[in-house]
Image (spheres, rainbow, N blue to C red):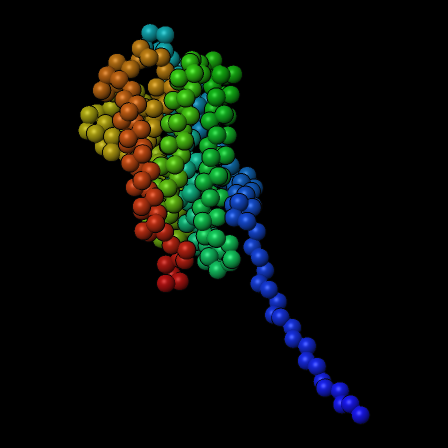
Length: 282
């Protein structure tokens, strides 16, 4: 008589769910950021549409020649493109990240399996999409309504591209870093918007830069918008206008160096000061 020996079944613990590849996570997060932006009416108006509205208004009021064959609208176009880059990067991120932090969204995201880098990749992709859309809309309005000339040569188009990309990088990183200096999301627009407006007034956006007081020019030269605007003038204005610049040229090498330096500074500051939690959370 044989005695059956009991058998024990061993079950392996359920395997941990596998995260999708990083590229898929980045793509999904980027899609979320873009959709969220275009669903926010305030952001859509003040970031994407507002520069074109200013071009329409100022172009109608100040349509005069500032140099032989060069209208103020053509000059203002370069400044508005630079302002669109500033709005898409610095203003957009400084305000929205501060709001998301106050609402606890960053805290919740930091506790998910999603790589934290995906959040920043999504924001950068959103900035690029919004920035390109803003510039495209400005060009359409400028050409259709005021007959603004677009960059005349392949070299000037290349200047427009690299100045835009470097400007978006610098402004985005500075916006990410500055968001941590804002106490709460409610105060973000009231803090960020005046800073952007002051920079626009002293950086040659609303006025010919060399017509500003020398002390104002010196202050503006510290910040990236002055150089971003100057780079855009190199793209949109004829080469003959270069003698009207403060240094007698568009100084594209200096533009690249200054914007590059601000990009590095923004990256370092973002790493050092960025917070996932609101100050009230400790």
